[in-house]
Image 1 (cartoon, rainbow, N blue to C red):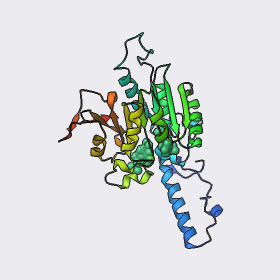
Image 2 (tube, rainbow, N blue to C red; image 1 turned 90 degrees about the vertical axis):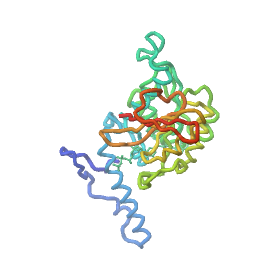
Image 3 (cartoon, rainbow, N blue to C red; image 1 turned 135 degrees about the vertical axis):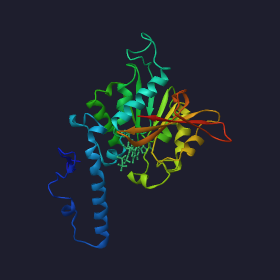
Length: 293
Ligand code: MGP
Ligand code: SAH
């Protein structure tokens, strides 16, 4: 990412690259096929520039050596959103806040949280920082280099003490895990083009449809938080809740902009005080829409 645009004093993005767009090294001369490949790579590079402008929103300690790869730039959960999710989950699992002396000084009880798609560690770090001292966070990723990156980033944040990693396929590993208190899911959505769809259906999630990811999670725990695109088809999310059990869908709004949604299942659903409620007609599931600002 060294060649990405730098944020100027005006807040505008200036290009700090040395003028080598990569075209020279790729060799511009060539047929139409090669040119199409270059066009696609250039478009990809330009598309990533905006995330550089958001780097401190993604990781406030970015300048302390945080590492990211291309996929992570657009997939990491922004830090404030990750903090909110982590606090919310630990509070729910601690039954509100435990009374002093029962749990840690911040009132949380020890938990084991499984982050099924840990990526560069955006969520995993906050699960570790916002949990009881004896808690455990298990991060799974199918790609070893992501795990290496997450481990490094957790060290930058001093959050590595409570974290264990598994390199492998969530679909195979999650159903075999026991004694997990909650599962967090933030799978790939098929790249930034997810937003070109008017409605993103749950079965468009990449490694397997969203319903299958939830079924695997349920083998480990009923308490599930699913990080979803802001254009998710809400009906699909409701359909995945167990009959008679509620689901809560929270909007993550950052600086007034809707970034993403999180569906909470099981004990992670907050009861009462809902700003908007939807009742699934003809079914027994209840859904709540709330704002996680
Ligand atoms: P975005 O829509 O690419 O960014 O992603 P932004 O700045 O809202 O886009 P704009 O073009 O509307 O200005 C929004 C958020 O979704 C990111 O901050 C990531 O947390 C999350 N996100 C995006 N993608 C493509 C993925 C993905 O594939 N998987 C996961 N887990 N999160 C993603
Ligand atoms: N929440 C993360 C971002 C996750 S991006 C953060 O804030 O940093 C999604 C991740 O899922 C990618 O790193 C990708 O390598 C991983 N992944 C894709 N398929 C997977 C699978 N079947 N099992 C486990 N991880 C997978």
